[in-house]
Image 1 (spheres, one colour):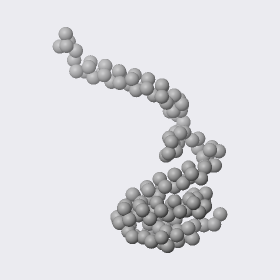
Image 2 (tube, helix red, strand yellow):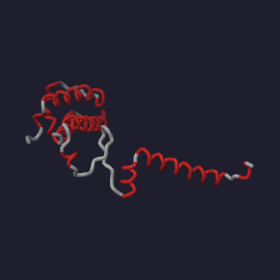
Image 3 (cartoon, helix red, strand yellow):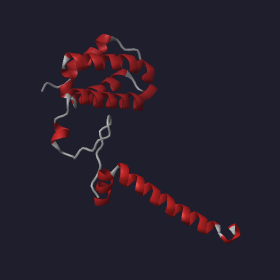
Image 4 (cartoon, rainbow, N blue to C red):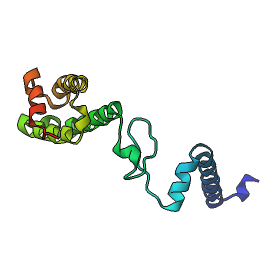
Length: 146
C-alpha cells in the first residue's frame, strides 16, 4: 500500500497539512495580528511586551517613563553590540548621545543613574573600552535642552 504513494504526493500533502495547522494556530492565538496581516496593515511591535502600536497613535507618543527606559536600554545595547571592539570613545559617545537625545523623559535622576550603571557595566564588556563615571556623566551635558 505504501508503494502506491509517491514522494511528490507525500510532500504536497505534508505542505497542505502544515499550512492548515499553522493558520489554525495563528487564528486561535493571534487573531488581531492575522487580520492586520491579511488587510495589509503594518505591524509595529514594542520590544518589551510585543503589543501592537499604531503608527502615530497616542500610546506611541505618550510612553510611560519606565517603558521609555526599557526602550532606551534596548537601543543602547544595540549600539554597543553594533559598534563592538572596532570603535573609539568619541564615536561611541557621539552615538550614545544621539540615542539619549531621542528620550527626553529619561533626564530624571533615577533614570539617569540606571542608564549610567548600564553603560558602566556594558561598555567594557562589549566594546573593550574603559570608561569612568565622569565620562558617562558628560553624556548628559551634551544633550540638547528641551
